[in-house]
Length: 265
Image 1 (spheres, one colour):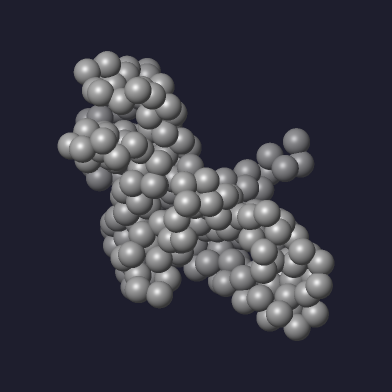
Image 2 (cartoon, helix red, strand yellow):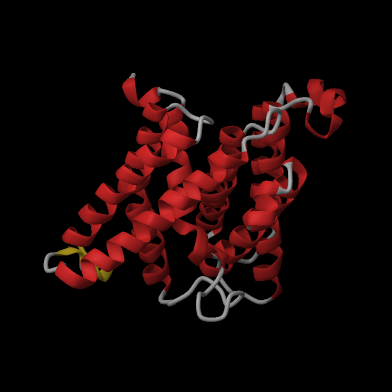
């Protein structure tokens, strides 16, 4: 992770493109109906839709990336091309054998919005045209702070359950304590990291403190809905990529909104 983030724009891009691909693969593996060979075909369809969407948004947002000026005319029609791709997915379902074709179409769309577009937002936060690795590491550091302090405080003084239906071990005391420590850490990061202003880092800290925990709960809700403990087995003892990056993916949406100043609008 550290090598990918600090190795330059290309290692960073490849690292998180692979993370997006693995997370999409696990996501569709959890949700799509397992009806023989069509399951793998649908999984591949969802993966392609997610990655093409991610790549298209990145190239549209950074037309000089990958020497992609030649693609400018094609990318100018990107929103309509996305509609075209979704139309192809509907035709794919037309010839499939699933009794819930529009349910499958909903899963394809969910993968785009839950995984592909948040990763595209990460690329925008880091700015591929003027790469800022400290922004990315700062977000990770705040998520780790939130998770660690919420666990330590919750295990010592936690009494009031936060969301027992989804996660029986999380407590209000741990969640609030983790959020406060995260905001304090963001102020410290802002003191030494000029990639964002201190006010922007504080905004990032607030977003991580609130939505990091909620992102973890959202993925727990997803896994409970399909009756599994882990999203995958790629990381022994930790589950899959989606298990490791659930909070991160969810937080990116709110961090992007925060640093763009939309929170104040």
